[in-house]
Each structure stands twice: as C-alpha cells, then as structure tokens.
Length: 562
Image (cartoon, rainbow, N blue to C red; front, side, top):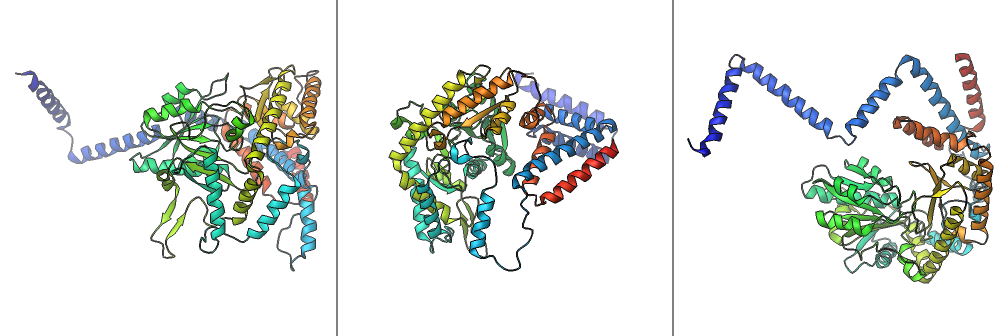
C-alpha cells in the first residue's frame, strides 16, 4: 500500500464506522436529527456573530435577571420614575412659565405679533453666549454676518436644489462651496464632494458609500474600525446601515488612537478606517499618517473626520502653527468631512463631505431608475433641501475669505494656548493629552470634576461634560477671543476650585450627581433610558402649571407608597 492510498483507506474506515452506528436508526429520524443539528449550528453561528460581545450579553442578561427580583424591581422603578420627573422638570423650567401653543390659532397672526413672540422665544435660556461664555455651539457672531445671512437667505428662502432646472443658481453655489473646500484640503481636479445638513449626515453618507463599496466587493457584513473617541455618528451609521463597528482603544497618555490595537481589529470584512482631526472629547488629532499606512497595507479606505477642525487645520500653516499632515496630501486618505457651520462661521445646517475621486462618491448617491414618478436621484439623505442655507454658506465663505479665516485661526489657537497654559497652573486640575487645536479637556484626581462644571454654570458658563474618564472641556471659538473672556474664565475656574477644595468630597447634586450616577451604573441600558427621558422632555408640550400639578400628585403618591 502506497502513502497516497492512506487517506482513502482512513476515509473508508470512517464511513463504515458511521454507517454501522446509524444502521439501527430509521431514515426519518436521521432527517430530523440532521435538521435539528443544522438549525442549532445556524443559530449558534448567528449568536456568536452579533456585534455585542458574549461577555457584554451575559452581563446584560444578569442585570435583567437582577432587576426583575421582586425586592429590587419596585425600588429601581421608583428611582427611574424620580429621575424622569427630575429630568423633565429641569428641561421644562427653562420655558419660564410660557404656555405652549397646542393647536393652530383660529385666525392667522399679524406679522408684528409674530415678531414680538419670536423675540420672547429667543430670549429664553440663561446662557450669555454673545459674551463668549459657551463652549462651542456658536462659533462666530457679529452684526455684519447677521446682515449678510438674513438678506441672502431671504433671496433664496424658497429655492430647492432638488429642482436643478428651476434653481440653477443654487446648484452653482453648492458646487462652488464644495470646490472651495476641496482646494482647502489640497484636492486635485479629481477630488469631489457634496454638501450635507451637518457633520452627522456627512459621516452617515461616508459610511453609506463605503458600505456599498464593500457590498460590491462581496463583503456581506461591512465593518467600521474607529477609535472610541470617534464621533457617535459612526455608531449611528452602523446601527442604521446594518454595519458592524469595532471601537479601538486610545493611548491613555496621548489620547490618540492606539495603532497596534487598530491593526489587530482589522479583518476581511473591514470596509473603513476612521481617524479624527481632531476628535470632539479631548481635541486631539489622531495619527493620520499611521492610520493611512494601515489602510494602504490592507487596501482599506480611510476617512478623516474633520467636522470640528475643518476650518482651522487648512489655515494653520499660514497662521504660523505647525501641524502634522492630515488631508489629501497624505496618501491613503480617501475622504474628509468638514463642517462649514462651525469654524466656517456659516449659519447652522451645512457641512461638506469630500472624496479623493468620483468613483467613491458614486457609492454615496441613491438612484431609483424604475419609479413611475420618473428617474429619482439624490446625492445625500434628503430629497428636497433648503437652498437658503446653501446660499448663506456660500455668501459667508466669500465674505470672510482666506485672509479672514487665517486671522480667526490665529486668534482662536492663541486663545486656546492661553487657556491651556492657565489651566495647567491651577492646582488639582490636569489636562487630557496635548491638544493642538481649539478644545481643552481637563479633569481632577482630587474632586468630582462635574462639581466644577456646576459651579461655573452658576457664573454663566456652559461647558461640555465628558465621561470615561470623568472630565469637562471648553471648545474655544471666535467668541472667546474677545478681550477679557479667557482671563475671566481662568479666574472663575481658579476661584471655583479653591472653594471646592474646602470640602472636595461634598455631594452638591446637579450635573455632578447626574453624571456621577450615569458612570457608576454598569447596566448601560438604564443610562440609555435616562437619555430617552431627556429627549421625551424636549418634545413635551406640558404647560408648567400642569407639570407642577403632576409633580405634586406624584409626590403625594410616593409618600403613600412609602
């Protein structure tokens, strides 16, 4: 017997052994067993392929079992109901007793009355953003910009780029905005893009393009690999588009994505690598060149999310600041998202998504050639779009120009450096990473950092709360470059820290209590439920008197239960 005959001999022996084991079984039983085993294997395969890890699912199962224990179920229910009441009350109190309009007026209002009511509505709120006391949100504001935006919007308020033949001027404006942004990021004649309604839509559309590209290559379940600090819009895209997203850890010292961990996360289904320039939480720029090397090695597209820094980074060199390469000069960068309505100083509702070439953009487009209503084609998520916001974006960019953006960049970066240096001198605080642009995140090892945020809020400041680790940040805008704003901020932080350190372990409630609770809850579904309460409250039209009565009745019922 030759060596070549051995496999056949072993296979024949196995066949005879299996046939002998099954000789006493009836054919119908073999069919049933085969079906059941196949179904179990299929079910197990689906169970193991779920996005959520097995450990996370086991934890969630344990929490659900524990929450349903009779002794805990009522307690948790009461606590969550109390949290809902507190969140709703907190959201509604900013309306200052103004009743809600619950139905159309019987007769239309005169324009004078509408203007008066609009003044009342816009006066709600306690944050003095015009004096630069808000982190981010409003990135620039002056009377000249307001005049340009309102007049241009008035001229284009009824236009809709869906109808190219009716409003060709708006299409021309949109094309020019996209081309100007392509030029800012060192694109060539092949670089192209689209305008969207904001950074989230830009990210959604980029993910849609790379998902469809992956499907065309035979990848059944495309996977996004992104740092944990990447914008939550990537998670939204994965949820909406049946994609898997893998979150990559960051270096706890630099707050940049860990390239070794990113490399380990890549597999045959990976359709996109993500890098931020900078990321929102800590204002850190990921190592773009390192991420693109991974992309080039494995032939995977790389998207640079520059929604936050898109109108700062392109002007850093001319403003006198050194910055690592981040745009189409880096081989391997295939797309970039850039918000015009942040540091571009345009009114809210515009962003730009650009690609290295048209072949990628084609995967973003949606076309239905068989609709009875005609051939339907749209470049992004909506069909109809406001030509007014496109026009105001175009007008604002032309008004400010390159020289204006360079000047603003210089002022914003210098102000950020001043704030960073000032915070570093305040005892009991530390800076997260080494921010190079406009965001400075800071925390404390000695007290609950959210207490500082609460105390600053009482002084009129509105900062952004972060988690994992507990911290807050200030996103420096053109509003903070005004004389005395940075100095006032640093002085207020210093005085608040001194007061807090007199009793660093005190529990004062407010954001400190809310965020502290949220981070301490291991069952994140309960945290999500708290977020649902907030969103529900934002859409509530319960008038204050009704809410107060409801709060009173709820309080009485709770006392009876106790």
